Length: 201
Image 1 (cartoon, rainbow, N blue to C red):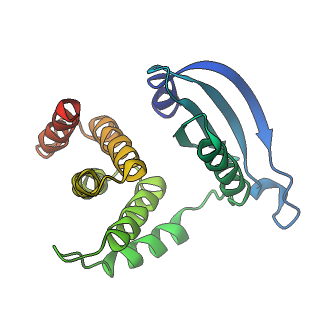
Image 2 (image 1 turned 90 degrees about the vertical axis):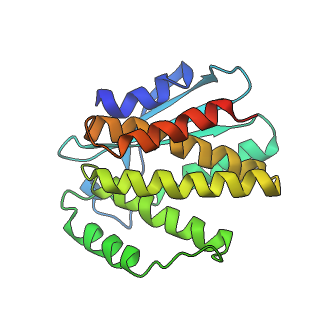
Image 3 (image 1 turned 60 degrees about the vertical axis):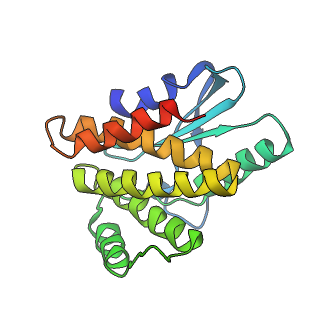
């Protein structure tokens, strides 16, 4: 629980906290999304941070954090995230989702000529992988490397949203990678990515 929640508190000052339940009649009651909702002012005082921490019947916690602007685009992002959370299905057995995401990752073939859309799709599969199998360091390592490539590409093409999301993903991969295996030799590469981001304008 401490590991999941600290992602929010590292970014924001808590202003609102509440328990939420989603009344989705299409799902059994024990599969409906429920958990903690946090929101607050970003520590940079330029953004608003929202977080949903889904809690299943076995008290396993999975967090989703959104760092958004105050304008209409930020409000729309918040509303979209709320819909995404409401459409989730909580499960206790992760075998099926693990099998599915592993099959999708096995199909990924990225090259220097891969499009940004293809890279974002691969990133989404890796995000799914670390969600259902958070104890595998290699997943965080590959996610960090791919996100760094996206960050560099987005900087060149001036895609502000992609630059921001890639940056946050890289910082998170180092944090969780360190939690999973602080002695892994490849952790130094994730640490190097983090250092490069701090120097980036």
